[in-house]
Amino acid sequence: MNPIVIAVAANARHDFSKQTRPSIRLLTGLGVEGDAHCGTSVRHRSHVRRDPTRPNLRQVHLIQSELFAELAARGFAIEPGGMGENITTRGVDLLSLPRGAELCIGAEAVVRLTGLRSPCSQLDGYRPGLMAAVLERAPDGGLIRKAGVMGVVVSGGTVGAGDAIRVTWPAEPFQRLEPV
Image (cartoon, rainbow, N blue to C red; front, side, top):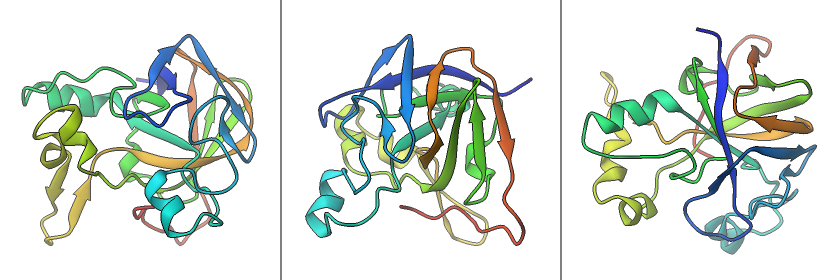
């Protein structure tokens, strides 16, 4: 199956979930037009409290729809945008990509992956028990965070459901995605 966009979402307020839309516009170096996390410096409230001058490495939040199917099998009904993501994908294992991988989405947009979304307690406010459901232990004991990946907009453009996704890999050696 070719990787595609399943849904797009944005929210001008710092609510947990985002509303799905027919399309969103990605702005180079800023993020999703009209979204609360759009900007060159950090916008996530807890990050702003720590240091509001830090660069915004969380301009775009992406989740693979395969996670929703996994969560549904565990009793969690999750819709696109529900976990606060801007872009819901299918057919690409976002969590296995290295830092610096670029997702070419649709005709123009390019998002460079910066790291993992670190699950927070707001997930439990959305669906009780969801935070634990998106965390696992690897065989080596390391924590696996499955709540999506974060990126920055390298090239802007309009993105909508059905758009193709092409992955461009960074130069080796690859660096694992870490929480940002």
